[in-house]
Each structure stands twice: as structure tokens, then as C-alpha cells.
Amino acid sequence: MTVMRNPLRADRRSGSSQDSTSDLRVRFIDVARRFDTEKSVFTAVEHIDLAVAQGEIVTLVGPSGCGKSTLLNMAAGLMPASEGVVEYDGRRVQGVNTQVGYVTQKDLLLPWRTVEYNVGLALEIQKVPKAERRERVTRVLELVGLGGFADRYPSQLSGGMLKRASLAQTLVYEPTTILMDEPFGALDAQLRLALQQELLSICGAYGTTIIFVTHDLEEAILLADRVVVFGKSPGRIVHVEPVNFERPRDLTKLRSLDEFRQVWDELWERLAQQLQETGVA
Ligand SMILES: Nc1ncnc2c1ncn2[C@@H]1O[C@H](COP(=O)(O)OP(=O)(O)O)[C@@H](O)[C@H]1O
Ligand SMILES: [Mg+2]
Image (tube, rainbow, N blue to C red):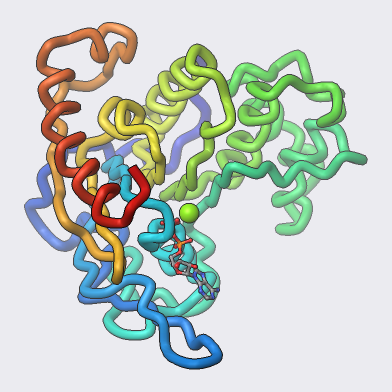
């Protein structure tokens, strides 16, 4: 696999520990988010304290409606916290946070543009010169395994290829953090595993920080340095589990280990409790 120019190369992951606040990327300090409804004020999340280190991968699991997407939206600066502070690289997030990329379940590919021009769109908007744009797009397409598909239109791509193109759209502007909201939810198990493995190898090489929301506990553990379990009503963090399997990880091997099953069992107990309490299980 080719590894492209990497401004973050020096920021390599140093394990899941956070020994100082200076290497923190994202930090939620006693954050609440409330929404005004017709009759009252609805508290979506409350008392959120979470610090994500440079290069760390944190996964979020919890019942539907517990505020996982809301948390990502606040980190992206798409909505402000109602209480508390959201910081990025030690500075309060105010307005859109251009340091982060956001990948959701729904892709944002324009049907009338080829893969190359979809992936290059953000660079066009930034007025990056055409030659450089082309070079960066070509590199990132190679990286996600779409080297030969630059001239295809989205309608000509499979589900897995669409996901790769979405990831390329984000990677091309080299964000220091990627927020991912159930990005692989709609894919079959085999394809998910392949994309999870590639995500780890690409972001491992870049030292990219990732906050990843999933409803799949296996996926949460395979990817994570820490798994954060949410509870509901109001949305809050009920448990944080460190996942210390060494990197790089061979995900196929990892998920067949007894140690992996043990972590899964422990976390499932906690997660199932939250699902039951909200009547979802
Ligand atoms: N813009 C909004 N206005 C009002 N309520 C919202 C808004 N966004 C989210 N909510 C509510 O906040 C809660 C958390 O939503 P969300 O973050 O999407 O949960 P999750 O991603 O964990 O399923 C839900 O009850 C949802 O209906
Ligand atoms: Mg959500």
C-alpha cells in the first residue's frame, strides 16, 4: 500500500494513554446539549467528559437516540454545546471545525461527477491548483483501492466502492481527525471487515485521530483504543473500556481470540443493560 505525504507523520500514536493535555485532539468538558421543543427543553446529552488523544481511535456505542451523533456534531462545530466546552487542539470549537472530516452512513457523492471530480471537490472549493489537485486525488484513490476507477460515476460503483470513495473524499484534505457515524452500517460482514482493516492501516500511517460511532460491538472493539458505552435519558457516558490489543491488528485473527471474546462479553453485558433500560433490546 502506498502511503502519501503525511504532515502528521511525527504525531504517531503512542498508545491509548493520555499523559498530558497537550496531546489531546478533542475534549468534551462537562458538555450538555439541549434542544428546545414546543413544550419543554429536551436534554439530548449531559455531563459528557471525554478526551481523545492525537492518533487515538475511540468508538461510541449505545442505544439509538442517546446522543452519539449529537456528540460528533458538536466536535465538528455543526452545533454548539448548550453547557460546558468542546475543545479541539486545546482551543474552544466555535463554528465549523475545518480540522475534522466527517463520514456518515449516507454518501455525499454527486451523481453527475466522476469519482475523481467528486473526491477533488473539496480541493476545488479550496482553490487548490489543478495539477496538485489531480496528484492528491490520484494518490488518495490508490490508497483506498480505487486507483482504476477515477473516471466512473457513482451509479457505476458497488456499495463497497461507494464507501471507499466517501472515505477518499474525506482523506483528500488530510484532516487530523475523522468523525465517522455508522459509516459501514449498510455493508455485508465480509466487506465491513475489509474496510475496517483498511481504515486502520490508512489512519495508522497518518496518525489520524478517529471518533467512530457504531451499533456493532465487534466493530467497536476491533477498531478501538477505547470503547465508550452510552446510556440514555438523558444521553451520558456510562462506561469506558480500554482495548489494549497491539497494533497493527489483523482483524480476522483478533476476533477469533479468546481475549477478544472476553472483552466482547464484558462490554455486551454493559451495553445490553443500556438497551434493556431503554426498551430497545
Ligand atoms: N436538531 C435536533 N432537534 C431536536 N432534537 C434533536 C436534534 N438532534 C437530535 N435530537 C434528539 O437528541 C437525541 C439524540 O439524538 P442523536 O444524537 O441523533 O442520537 P444517536 O445518534 O445516539 O441515535 C434524540 O432524542 C434526538 O431526537
Ligand atoms: Mg446517530
